[in-house]
Amino acid sequence: MNDCDAAHRFESLEVKFEICCFWWVQVHQDLIYQLIPQIYKRVFCIKEPAPRPVFKPICIGLDDAGKSTLLSSLAGESTDDIQPTKGFVIKAIQFDDCILNVKEIGGGDTVRPFWKHYYQGADAVIFVVNSACSEDEMIKASDALSETLEHPALRRLPLLVIGNCQDLNGARNVSQVIWIEE
Ligand SMILES: Nc1nc2c(ncn2[C@@H]2O[C@H](COP(=O)(O)OP(=O)(O)OP(=O)(O)O)[C@@H](O)[C@H]2O)c(=O)[nH]1
Ligand SMILES: [Mg+2]
Image (cartoon, rainbow, N blue to C red):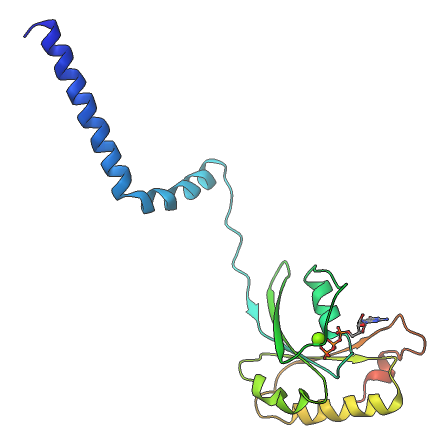
């Protein structure tokens, strides 16, 4: 074999090798895409964050209690253009040690009769009350909460009552908002 033949043979082997590599990359594309981030993390010693538990509380309260405003600010979102909640919305709130997927249910007179349809799957109850509201509104809120807690799906769940609107004149303090009977 002369030099010219050897060079030609070498070139055709090189082409075959490239075709093989190209074919291998095509076939194993998905595997490569999965491996690249893992290799990157190994090389730069990036640890996977520990999985955080996810909780699914419901958030209820009369309309205008400030549920959407509160949840949006906890989620780091703007509170500039919040509209009354029709039906329900789910808001994901990330904490260092857990994630809350909070289901906020609108508190208007026309929505409240339907609250019970949204209780399934809840693992806690957050009740928001406007702590500066009138005495009549406070009684209405108390009645709504008592009725809600009688539902079998919620009876044994942890309860958090939030006295919102503490910046307003006449806002009640914690002991004035706690009216729940044992
Ligand atoms: N001053 C004051 N106003 C608030 C506060 N929280 C909410 N608001 C105002 O109260 C109004 C009603 O707030 P929303 O967050 O829509 O109330 P909501 O409980 O979600 O009402 P629904 O969705 O209709 O049940 C808005 O105009 C808010 O800006 C607060 O802490 N202080
Ligand atoms: Mg709302």
